[in-house]
Image (cartoon, rainbow, N blue to C red):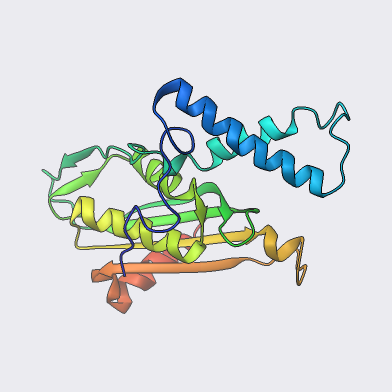
Length: 211
């Protein structure tokens, strides 16, 4: 099912939360840095260590960058072109790299997305595949939700005959903690429209296997 852009986690204003412009952004970064500093203190770390003196600010800035998809107004503007040639076969962009952060543990997961659609009246500018993926990846995220959000965006913006997204990713919450299984790959897929037909799915998956 499609998942709305503003689904949990919540929307971030400016770099993080609260306020507009540089003053609001600086204040928000300061609040995040304060919380990070508290965590470091609870861990018993010596904050006078030169290697830790600016860690709280660096982490705050990193979160502002990694979660930039939550910023108000960050939804990408999609450039579409009229399908004057009446192209009716599959359009695929594959091996699109991405990095995101697991919403459960706030550690990275990363991999590649493969996106396809069969157009009706509009063709998507090729660079927009990556921008759409980046928008949804830059927030605390679940791979399942990311997959649904991307395919939902394609369906809503293009109104194609169908769309399909496959994401393959490695999760550090699996590799470096808990069960500790390095190299495990999670694969998710989501589809709309004509891709419910087995022949269309098989064509897409066959094209993914080709070098």
